[in-house]
Image 1 (tube, one colour):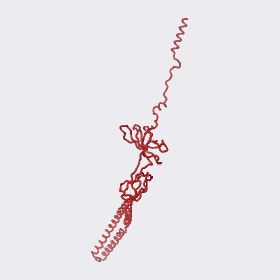
Image 2 (cartoon, rainbow, N blue to C red; image 1 turned 60 degrees about the vertical axis):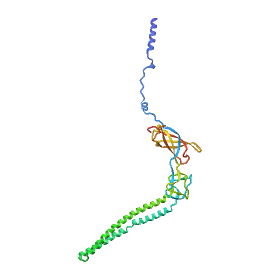
Image 3 (cartoon, rainbow, N blue to C red; image 1 turned 90 degrees about the horizontal axis):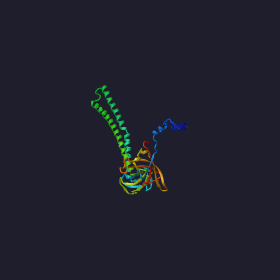
Image 4 (cartoon, one colour; image 1 turned 120 degrees about the horizontal axis):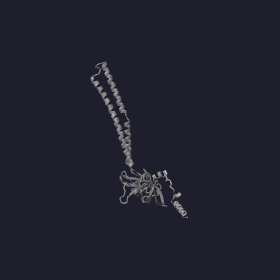
Length: 318
């Protein structure tokens, strides 16, 4: 009986010491090659959106249009608020004397052109040389046949005639060349006279809106005096400041969106593009000046407005 109890206890002890099938040694798992390769490439980051909470809308171009000649204004053809195109005539200064001078310069150019194209003297001089040489040749033949038929003084005269005719050819060619140079001078004088007439016209250097007319018809103006002021409104820019840490790429690739309140359209959104990032960083707040240009063909946005600018900054290396 005691022996049977001992065998039972020994069986229980051996069963507890034996490893369980569920805990049997398993082969080590091999890492997946595709997972390992993917772990080497960091996930691509989406472009970061940064905001300039308050950017000021400004003009890109404006012009104070001056008079280029002194005189009395014969006409002012525009008014405040009128849209004008580049090159359009805005005002006219009395140009009577300038036109008379231009007409005279044109006539003088016509005369110079005729002279430059006239080669009659050159051809006549060349023909005179031929005649003089022929006469000298006949005289020399006559002397060979009939000695002393022509005196030496006469022969000297004939030789002199030939030399004079040859020199006249050179002189005619010289005068023909000078006539060509004279024509070029008259062409320059004619262009200058026409330019003086043109300077009596006051034209728009840029397209935009006339916002100021400083002189009226009948008033005297001096060269350099501002007669009108024009603002270009079809393209504007918003200026604001951005934290320098967001500078991570070429500014020409940055797209932007302006959000501003327009009459009848609060919270309007307009697409724009970053065109300039200042290379200078403010040492106090670590910000840089940023310019964003927008199209404003409908003239909905006005200079002086405030707008929120959202810029999509690509990640480094993009």
